[in-house]
Length: 179
Image 1 (tube, rainbow, N blue to C red):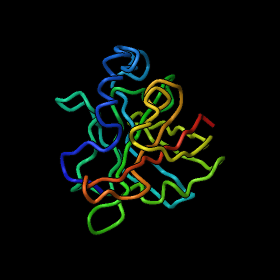
Image 2: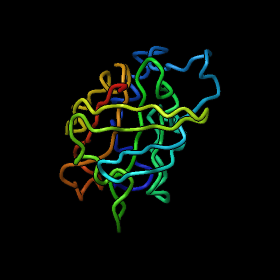
Image 3: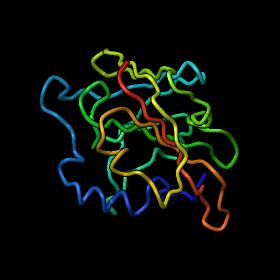
Image 4: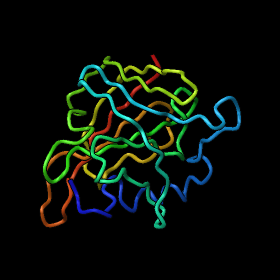
């Protein structure tokens, strides 16, 4: 949970890394996936089925978040690879709202080997197996590992809530590879 309008994922570090890595962070392709986007995510182990929306960069150069008004929707960062294609594919969701759990509330309960499925607009369903889950302080966000290294990454907030800042102090990140 965080104040609306405040980017809580990787803060200014994401914007700086996006500039530093330049085009390597923009892994879109013109081959068979042109125009294909992920539509939904399904994680049976935590009873999660949710639609995906497209996320870009804010005017500040930071990765957008799904709107707080849509807590049951996750977002795919459109500067990352389409799930199933080579490169980093990043899906972001909120952990909660001021009043209730949100789409990635149970994300931290995932375990190594569990399945994550992503349905694409071309009808293809891509299956991933969870490799690892980590909780990291936002000041130590592993930007390169999330936005550059191959595989699916699921990102939400976690840890203690800092009431003075209006945000969680950590991120929960799930790393998965194609099954």
